[in-house]
Amino acid sequence: MDFNQWEPIYESILKDMGFSREGDEQAALILSDMLCSSNSADISWLLELIEGRDILVCGNAPVLGDELELVYADDLIIIAADGATAVLVDRGIIPDVIVTDLDGDVEKEIFANKKGSLIVVHAHGDNIDKLKMYVPLLKKIIGSTQAAPLDNVFNFGGFSDGDRCVYLAKEFGAASINLVGFDFEDKNVNPVKKKKLEWARLLIERINP
Image 1 (cartoon, rainbow, N blue to C red):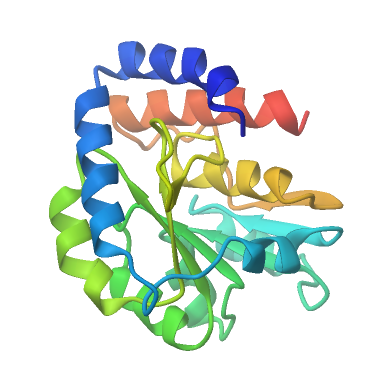
Image 2 (cartoon, rainbow, N blue to C red):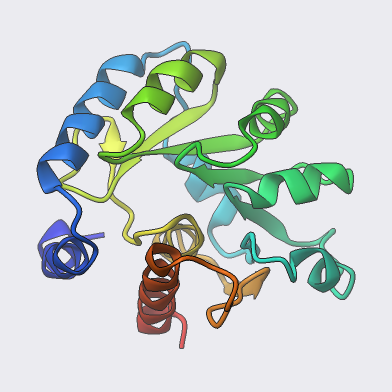
């Protein structure tokens, strides 16, 4: 992702959501300082997993469980958005990649990570406490940010966990991107989540119409 192309979108999201760029930048720096050779994965691992492959992106909408029953996932690379990890793990599925800001069932994410999942940990202004709590418990980490990238904290595009999964798949050359567990019209969400779903749909439509 060329940050110069992403930045105007990012600024629009910040304005609409009332979030702080400074908070995002601070979180990215904190995550950067926590990453080292012993707990990090090289982004070349993502390229090896994703390039030219058919990808199943699992969102965490309530429909995920039912939709998984309709998909033959054995030949697909599975990218899980945060809380979707728990649904997958409970079905005996270890995702290839987890994209998370650590506000889901982190214990299930730690379990999957120990079983081999790459984990793309996202830093933003509201999760600094969770970064400090959980990053030391993880390995095979790739850091991400929605602000300007750092040497070891990347911006692949996207805003919320689900659409960041899609942007990650696109960034690393997926042959196809298939979505399950997405409900952009979910009525049972609070106003903040509703806005996030609206942005997720807009962002996904930009690259996966």
